[in-house]
Image (cartoon, rainbow, N blue to C red):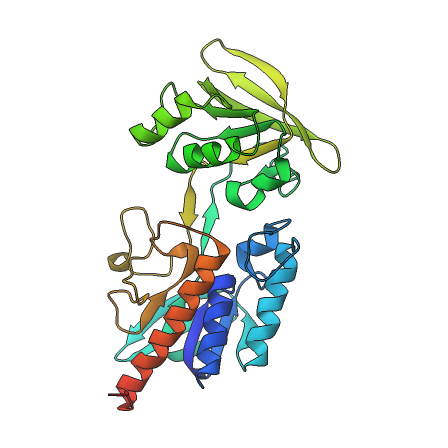
Length: 312
């Protein structure tokens, strides 16, 4: 059994930020990651809106910088998949797929949320090469280009409006004959001269060359026909899947995200959540980093209270 003060599950920006702040507070910290440091950040081709970087940086590079910085302060990164997480008394126990058990006083859950994919040919191949799941992240790379936005919810319409400020050629496509987004967003989209609405359509395939998206194969559901149309980018907003299978449903909202207060505390003492896995209004690298720092600070204070060392 491996013991530490703070156990962090997930090594995206939120997890790495939490690891750094918890370690700097003098806590023993282990960070468990099942794939690679950086989490979903590793799949972002270029990032240009993170403070402190005057030139675009790849998601891989920024993830590795976070990783190195967390280790500099003493956090330990372990590649392992957590199978179970439970609490007994004031102690958490996490069992991994390789049979190891980690014991901690506080746990910061930072597993993130995955973008729901369409599951069509070309989607994975051109991910980061014209296929994107974040308008504010990648939109500036397609100024003046032909952009296709797929989806009918608030995120799809909000990002379509944002992208319409960068290009006069934005097409918003939805599989139904009406949007599920808020009425005010729908009205804004309808009034926007830079956005073309294409309803009752689905994307069947994304085409391109080795470097970028060039076109998509569409299905016109109303007229039962297929046709190809040229696009330089495809932004997909068909929902998110929070990675919360390990948690008790009592700490989740109706959409499966973790409910926290402003201190990143869940309803279970000692359990914190940070980043995209949390019920939040904005999901960006900068907000994930902030969540992680707050969670680490409050987790350290929680440990102080249990040990009778709280500052009064």
